[in-house]
Length: 450
Image (tube, rainbow, N blue to C red):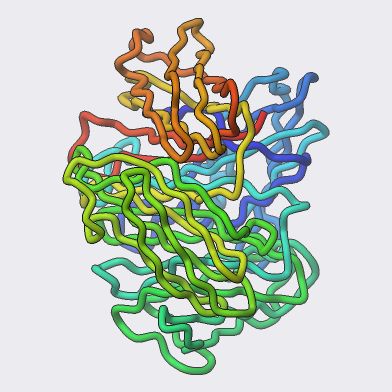
């Protein structure tokens, strides 16, 4: 099935696709997994794209060179099963590096299912994460949500070595602030991936109990890129690992729910500092909740347990008293699920590069949050010429734009530019096949600075 083609902003032309694993796996007797890499040209000149595929040992198994340049401002989707050679396509599991002479961005869609096109039940899983620019790799990564047998969820942690051969250490923290286990992947080669499955992991020291819901700090002498899959047999939630530079003492979450069209949400906040901190979440409906997180540990805020009205949809500001924090938002109906990353700031203009109405069944909902200190007017300009607006949006409030209700043509796929008159904004997009109820037909992404 064809996917929409646009994605998250990158600042340089080399992108690490850390979690392209499993890209295609057909020999394990379970539903096959496939991946598509979507690449956008953010430059004013055509871009040629090269994708190098590495197996989990770091061996280069294939180089794909697209002989047709991507037009300025355009995008292309590379469906992995069609660009890998027959000799590796049915068993490949690994990572990739996407490169170009132009400024590009990339996103990966992970899909699992049975039958033709991988679109048939059981086990329909959908996840999305972004390519990591080479300059954004680091020797320490943070994963706010890692689980083992937690309400049937288990985590798959995937870290790609973006430098020379080195050991990679995974340290696990519970929400009481204790370091409970360590796992060391030794001698991970350049470009290779260390893959940690929490349901089968035997730590080097300590143990991870069933029911674990905590956080992870990943360290190495080499630069790393990483992502996390949190999954049951029926839903998949995927997010990018953070670096310390992604953190801050103030974060924003534009789209939160309590039984909103069946969706509930939670925020899991990880302390990336060296001292304990009080984390306060102030919601747009006036509810305020504070919890404490020790160094490297996380605190979980579950919206259906905080007194929000049933059917509530809103936003939140997350503040930390003594240390920088990072956070992941989970959205779940029990059938469809996704993650997005809370952000430290915004601008007066952002871009939503993938907006759709009934595009291969997928609709989008754009949510924009005023993260400033004064009221603002928000205008949305779509690539098909339509527009939408909201006036007098108060500080800390968010406004949704349901794109399937705005007059776009059926099967339309395009983009949107969102402008604020007086305050910085940020936004998220939920992309969902609303007609499907037999699996996890939902993705999310953060809007981008232009």
